[in-house]
Length: 377
View: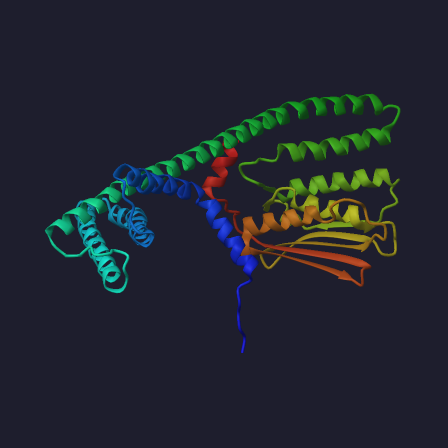
C-alpha cells in the first residue's frame, strides 16, 4: 500500500507563500482587531473571553470574504437580473449569519463556561443586534469588492497600454526599416551598376559575377510582400544567375545539371522557395565530381509541380545554422499550401542528399487579414 505524507518543509513553504501573498489582509485585520478588542475594551473597561473573540471574529471574517467572493460576484454576474438576485442572496446570507451566530453562542453556553452566566435567547433584540453587526461587515466587504475590481481593471488597463505602446514602437521600427529598405537597395544597385560598367573592359569575369549578384538581389528585394508568390520562370531565371555566380567563383569546375519543362514557367509558386532549395545545395553539397553531378529538375507531373534536387553531401560542413533556410520554407509551404504540398528529404548513407517537393496546382490562398497587415507594414 502506498502512503503519502506531506513534507513538513513543503507545508511550511506553502504557508509562507500564502502569508506573503495575503500579507496586507493580515495587516488590515490585525489593525481592526486591535481597535475593536484592545481599544474598545480599554474604553469600556471590559474584555471578553479569548475563545469568544476567536469564534465571533472567525464567523465575521468568513462573512466578509463570503460576501465579497461569492454573493457580490454571483449577484452581479448577470446585470439584467442582479436587482432581483442580489437582494435575495443578501437575505439568505444575513439569515444564515444570524443562525450561525446563535448556534455558536448556544453551543458555547451548553458545553463551555466561556459565556459565564450570560443567557442566549433567539428573540427580537438578538436578531436586530446580530443583523446590524452582519451588515457592518457586509458594508466593508462590498467596498472591498469594488476596490479589488477597480485595482484589477486598472492593472489590466495599464498592461494593455504597455502592450499598445510596445506595438506602436514595433510598428515605428518596422516602418523605419521599410523606408531604409527602400532607400538602401537603390544606392546598392546603382553602386553595383557603376562597378559593373567600369570593370567590364578590364575584368569581364568579375563584371559577370556582379551582374548575376545584382539580378539575384534585385529579385529578392522586389518580391511583392502582399502576394508572397511569383511565377516559376522568375525563380528559374534567378537559379540560372545563382548557378552562374557559383561557377564563376569556382572557375567553372562545378558539375550541375539543371533541367525544367517549358510547361512549368507560367505556373505560380511562393517566392524564393526554389532559390532557397538550390542555395542549400550549394552550401552543403559537394558539386565538383563530374562523374556524380548535382541535379536540379522542375517538372509538371499529374497536375503537380515537382522540384527535385540531388547532390553529394560535402564532408566539410559550413558553420552556422544548417538547414535553417529549409526549415523556413517548410513552414511557408505548410502555411500557403497545407496538405496540397509535400516535401521529402533523404540522405543515402550520409553520402548523397535528395529532396523532392510536390505542389498541387491551384491558386495559393492567404487570409485577408494577413494580406492587409502586410500592406499596412
